[in-house]
Length: 323
Image (cartoon, rainbow, N blue to C red; front, side, top):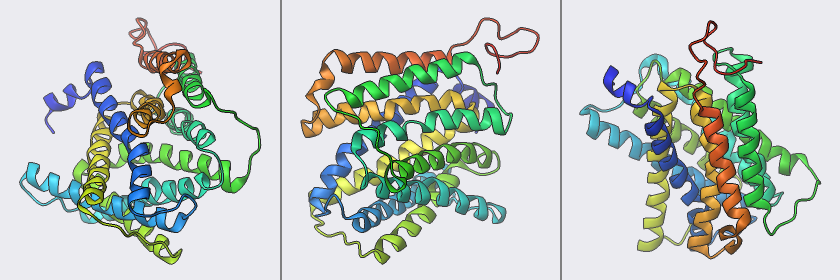
């Protein structure tokens, strides 16, 4: 990518617009997967079939990504010899581990608790490069912005629902492990994208991770049946949205600080709830005061994390007060 193109991807308005496209696409996956389970006769507690379905979806996402890259770059995207191990690790962490933990955890807890815990990946994605890798500044404003955004996620999920404090490793614990895996994959993606094409990185990590999931889902006795023109179209949409959204997200991570991009992850559950209300007629309460307040808080949190401090050009070049 040219310097002009990379500069374009660092503009705040571009980051916001493209990140929101990703969040809307990922948010649409929530209701579409639920509709897909009905079309393909997958029961709520049938974890094996859910994992198999997810594996098939992501494997196809990888193929679609590679084909798009082939068409746009006029050459077949093939990993460099030294890239196979990083791509395999990314596929294992970002796709396989994350979704295995998420599917099993979701079967052992409520959707409300899963959505709230999963959103903690934003905190983790900001803390890893700041505290462990020392690549980015951790400021009070970033922490405050994350807290504000997190409160918004809690609000839109708790409105009309209850939240008990019971916890178990195979439920809430697994959802948290999924969030950690997802956050770690952000950092890995940014690092590996320095040396490899984003099409290669995204496409083959989906293929590797999807293959692992297909294997596990098959071993657990999973089955996916009921392919019709309508259900096949939905399946293709789910595969394509993953390919498009993850490619855009990886491009943003490649040219921007992890925290600046990952904070938009707070919009995923918000978009999921809104689109579920529209497509499934669920959660009509989102149009009330709490739903609007949640959206405002999430947007405010994103703004605070990405706010350009006017003291940026101070002696130490930090953004806000570093911790």
